[in-house]
Image 1 (cartoon, rainbow, N blue to C red):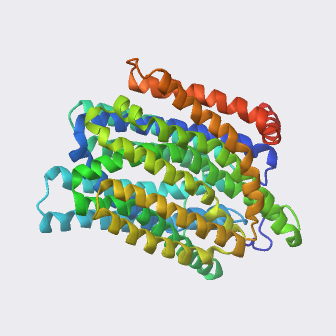
Image 2: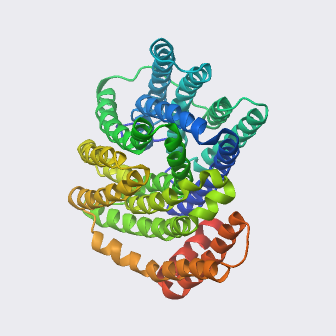
Image 3: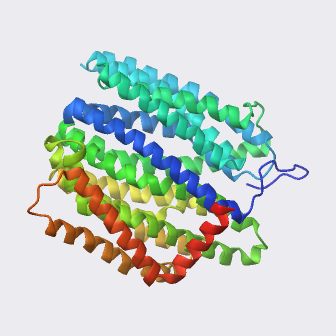
Length: 500
C-alpha cells in the first residue's frame, strides 16, 4: 500500500533486531494453541468416536469457509498499509459490518437446513453456534492484522495464548458435563470472545466509519485478489472432507479429519509464525533501500527465510511420517488406527507445501497480488479433479492424491516466484542441501530405535515421543557439525534477538 502524503505512519518502523524475537513468541503461541486444541481433540475423539466426530468436522468445515468469505482481505490490507491509523480503523469498521452480514447468513443456513433436511437438533444447534463463532472470528482476524501492523506481535501472541487456555477449559469442562459435540463449539466461542476483548485492550483503536475514494477502490481491488486466492486455497483444503463425506460417509470423514488434524497441528506450528514473520521481513526488505536493489533484497530475504522454515519444519513432518501408528494408538485408541497411514501420507504432502509459505506476503508486497487468483484457481481445479477421482477408489487414494497435488503446487510456486517476483530458486535449493544429511541421521535414529526395541512392549505414545526427542538431538548435533554456516547464522541471530 502506498503511503498518503502528509500522513505520518503510526506503525513502528522497527528493525531487524526484533524479527527473531517476534517469530519466537509467535512460535510459542502456536505451540500453546496447538497443545490446547490437541488436548480438546484427544478428549473429544475418545468420547465421540469417528462417526460423531465426522459430523462435527463437516459442520466445522462449512463454518470455516463462511469465515473465509467474511474475512475477504481485511487483515492483509491492514498489514500492508504504510499510512497512519485512520485507514486501518476504517477497514476494521468494514470487517465488523461483514461479520454481522455473514453471521446472519450462517443463522439463515440453519433455518434452511431445518426445513430441507432430516437432521438432529444437535446438528442444528452446532450450525447456529458456528455461525456466531464465524462472526466473532472475522473481527478477531482484522484485529490480528491491526496488532501486527502496529508491531505488537508479542501482545498478539499473548492475547491468543490467554484465549486458547480459556477455550481449552470451557471445551473440556463441557465435554465432561455431557454436552457432547456442542462442547467443541462452546470452546471456540469462549476463545474468540476472550481474544476480541484482549485485542481491543491492546490496540485501543476503535473501528471508524468513512472509508471512501481512492483508498476504498484500492481496498476493493486488493481484497478481491486476496479473497479469491484465499477462498480457493481453503476450499481446496476442505473439499477432501466434503468429497469423502459424499462418497464414503461420516466415519471415513472422521478418520481422515483425525489424521489431517494431527498433521495440521504440526503444520500450523511452522506455517503460521513463518507467514506472520514473512510479512514483516519482506515489508522491511521492500522499504530498506532504492527500487534498483529490490530484487536482491527480496531474494536474500526469501532465501534465508525458506532455509529457516525448512530446517525447523522438516524434522517435525519426518517424525510424523515415521511414528504415525504409535501416535494415533497412544493418543486416541486402537479404534482410530485406520487413520495412522493417512497421517504419514498427509505429512509428506504438507512438507512439500512449506516452500510456498511466503507466497501471499511476497506477491502482495512486490505488487503482484493480481497473479494470485489465477494461480490459485488453476491449482484448485487440478486438486478438485484429482480428489474426486481418487475418492471413487477409496480413502487412502484420496490421501495419496494430496501428495500429487502438493507436487503440482510446488512446481507452480517455483514458476510464480521466478517469473513475477524475480526469485532465484537455484540459490534456495543450494542452501537447503545442507539440511539433508542431518535429516537422514535423524530419521535413521528413529528407525534404528524402533528395530532395537521391537521385542519390548513400550507404551506407544511414550515410544513415539522418546524416539522423537532422541532423533531431534541427533539432528541438531548433525546440523551443528555438517551445516556450520546455517548453525552460526542461527546462533548469532539468537544471541542478538533473544538475549538483547
